[in-house]
Image 1: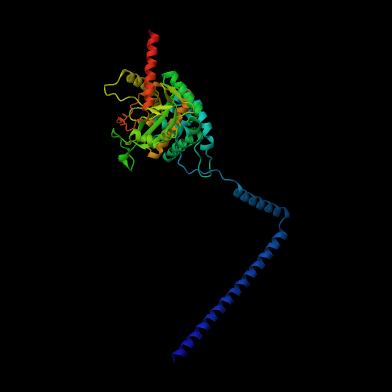
Image 2: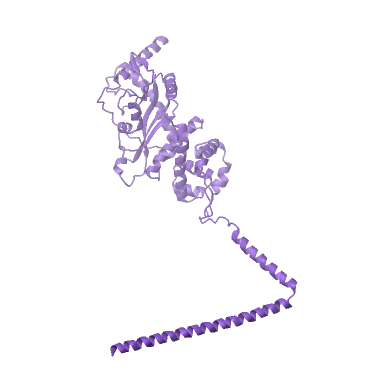
Length: 440
């Protein structure tokens, strides 16, 4: 009985589906017939209208239709102008005020003359120049370079720089970062190279003519650059004066130009350890300061060497003064006096470097990595300004700089370099005696 019921249900369901399908087919056929009747009526109306209408009127309608179609097509093909979605900001100071700056005003605000500014822009054009896009107008090259110089020269906060130049805060940060990268890429190979033998001989001759120090090719010293306490390893960057810093180790020639720079080591590290972690230590150990022809001084063959302070280890290529315990001989005091006089060149170089670029004496609102890049950029720009004879104003020296940490004297464990220092000791003593004899 149940099987019969199931079969009846299936038969009924099948019949119902067939009946519904038949209704759909009949409805579709009626719609098709109705559409055909409407199309036939429209065709007859169109034929009647075309026969009764004036030919000139039909041509005019056709012309207007074609013209409308051409305009629509042209509107799609026409390139739309760039649509900027950045917020409009006022750059009146840069557009109107700076354009009327005299050369003295350029030096006062940007620390370089307008001629040097144009030179920097020209050299960095291939690296820093950007193009407008459909969605954003780029910051012009001159403004990007000016933002970088302004940040280095004044150490203003990014929000103040952004407001002054009419850009966003992120844009100002990006301009500074890209400016430092571009200066390093373009000017570092030209302005801060490891001296070749010919250049070493030239530096040595200058030191001897000016300070009577033979075979000296540079002075090495460090300076602590203040930073905001980083989020990680804060204690490593805390120096002996209880402020956070990174260390700049530099070597200068007799004219105060940097020819080797190491920057970024945390401020808690001793000067001697900074030296050993830098490439300069490798240069010294790889006989970089040993020329093909050494100079005989007091019976000792002496190569090239650097001058450092008491915090450095004595080496054949690194001379330091005698530690004054109150028992120094006259010859040792003479040696110390001459060495310290020659060392003054790097103190003067650091004064001019930090006086021109205030970001090196004030804590900057930048992360540690960008601070390292900024310090290296400042050293390169220092060489650029000094080599181009840029004006340095003495009042730039006066801004209060943080007190540099006092570094303990390096305790000697080896006697390397003692013979060279003794030879220089006797050389300076004989030189002084010769001077006394000439005066008498």
